[in-house]
Image 1 (cartoon, rainbow, N blue to C red):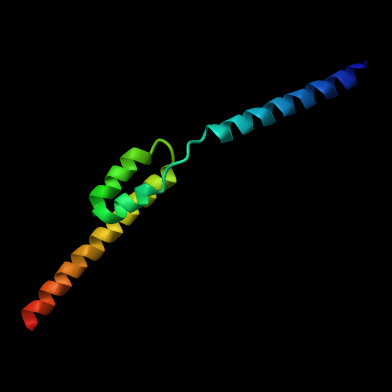
Image 2 (image 1 turned 30 degrees about the vertical axis):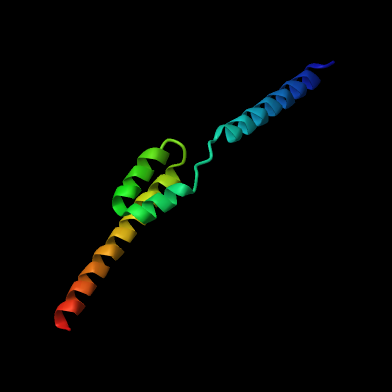
Length: 91
């Protein structure tokens, strides 16, 4: 074989190896259970913090979502309590 052919074969082998490594990296990503969303929803900000700590190493997007869901449910809960307190004090 000529040097050009050998170079082409080496480049193709390197591309195949890099594609195999990429596939291995994709397989190594751990799936995070969607139950953490429920924990954040049911326990508010505290559940969001717990969900964040539990999932931050595996999937940072789920971790941030847990924080936001917990914060949102806590704010809704506080507003509901304030609204009920105000409406009961008037009537």
